[in-house]
Image (cartoon, rainbow, N blue to C red):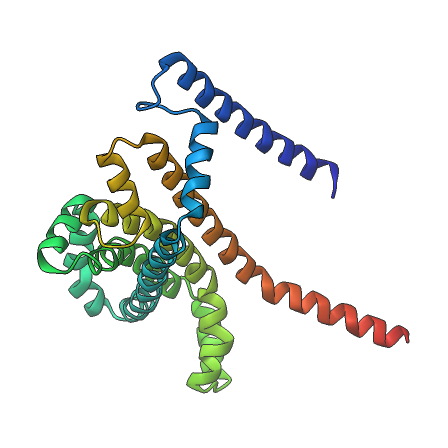
Length: 263
C-alpha cells in the first residue's frame, strides 16, 4: 500500500473520530439521553437489538425490498431508456411520466401508495417511482452518446444486430448503465426505509425506527439509523466489487498465462 493511500485512510479515520467527538460532546452538553444519547449508549442499544431474534428478519425484509425495487428499476428503466434513446416519439410519450416522477415529493408518493396498496408493497412502489427517472435518463443519454461513426462502420462491415449489440451498443452504454444503477441503488435504500417508517409494515428497519420513536427510545432510533447507513454502505461496496470482478478475473488469467509461459 503506497503512502498516498495511507494518508487518505488516515484522513478518513480522523474525520470519523471528529464526528464521534462532536456527537459525544453534544450528548454531554445536552445531558438528556432522550434527546441525544452518547455513542456508547447507542452502541449498547445496537448490541441489544442484534441479540433479539427478529433483528435478522427485519434486516432481510428491508434488504429484500430494496433489491426487488432496484432490479425492477434497472430492468424497466433500461428498457424504456433504450427505446426513448432510439425513438423521439417514445421519449415524447414518456416526458409527462418523468416530470411527474421527478416533481412529486417522496412523502406524497408514499402517502398515496399507502392508500392504494398494502404496507409491504408501498416501499417497492415508492422506490420504483423515485428511482425510475434516474435510470431512464442515464440509459437514454447513453444511447444518444453512441458514436455515429462507429455505428456507420458496423453497417459498412455488415455487422448482424447481435454483433452490433455485443461490440458496439453494450460497450458504449456500459458507463451509463453503471452510473444509473449506482445512483438508483443509493436512492432505493433511503426511499424504502422512509416508506417503512411511514407505513410501519410488520418487519423492516424503518418499522423498528418508527416504533422506537413512538416509545421515545432515541438510542434505539439511532442504532437502527446506524444499521441503515451500514446497509447502504455495504450495498455500495458490493456493487463496486461486482464491477471490479471482471477486471480482477482478467488480471488473474493474464498472471496465470505468464506463469505457464515461464514454466
